[in-house]
Length: 126
Image 1 (cartoon, rainbow, N blue to C red):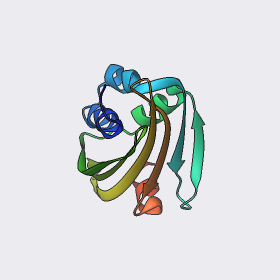
Image 2: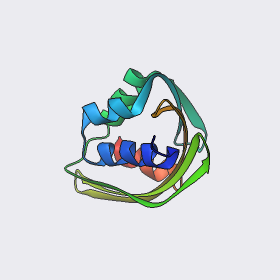
Image 3: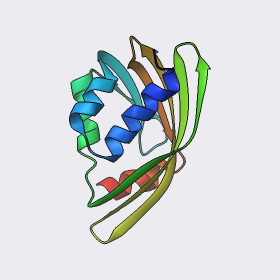
């Protein structure tokens, strides 16, 4: 059984490579995600399909999401820090995010995400 941080790392690596099936496999069908919004609050996203749609909407010709640190917080939680780099429409993004995930049956069942610069990121992806 993989530790929780490894499960979340797999999700992040699948997103960086834009491998939809691997993203889906890492997420519980009934998962809930709390995703940073432009105001620095969070948007609640319920369900694997809704969350994957949101991830797939973040398309860029150049996209790199690199795990810079990962920690298993408890038997069912992993915490990751990631560095995000992207380029699209003649603009560049360089930001950092943290993900705290609860893992059940080797899949992410709850995911909290915070960003260093949420308004900057929101503006880039629009």
